[in-house]
Image (tube, rainbow, N blue to C red; front, side):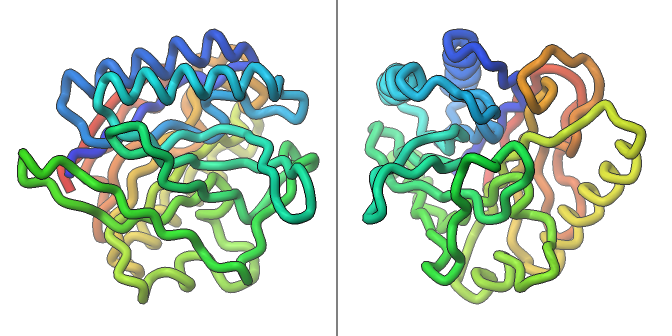
Length: 254
């Protein structure tokens, strides 16, 4: 199965984000990719005051566009879910097949300061596993995928999400990130992100596709290196790693 990643700018302007995601979908279609992975908050922007109505309308546009282009999505966005306790703000990866059907969502488990208005997912409810269906005409079948949102990849002194899923016949870890950058400790965090991505793929023996936002976390313009690398990690090694600056597309045949 051919899965693409898009390291793209995630702004506060949803119209701008829609156009950015459309361009990534266009690239994925040209490259005959089955699925496209986008960063955390790539549609809504990553900020507590995101425009809910505009995000709902924008998602409908993106859903239809990807369907027409025959590209499945692993789309990072903030969202509002209607759950048994009411309307809940979530930070999600939303999964869609190539025909535009919604496969389900993964909610962020380990929140950080920008997530203060969102509820984190309770691991006691289990970790969602999404079956990504490929194209039978090309011999591409399916992959069992688990989504991790930014901080979910890094350990937090408790049982990690990876420990929950590594014995569940998982084929791929999909990591959508949107981290802080431009501070004096960037070098420290960069080394930590790189080492942990590599060690996680090695220990779990599950390949990782990871993509980061190329702007500041709050959606402001930024032309420096991303907070974590974007690319493909297999058995502890970078099988593919793109430039840490600006918009970058890549794919891998799993």
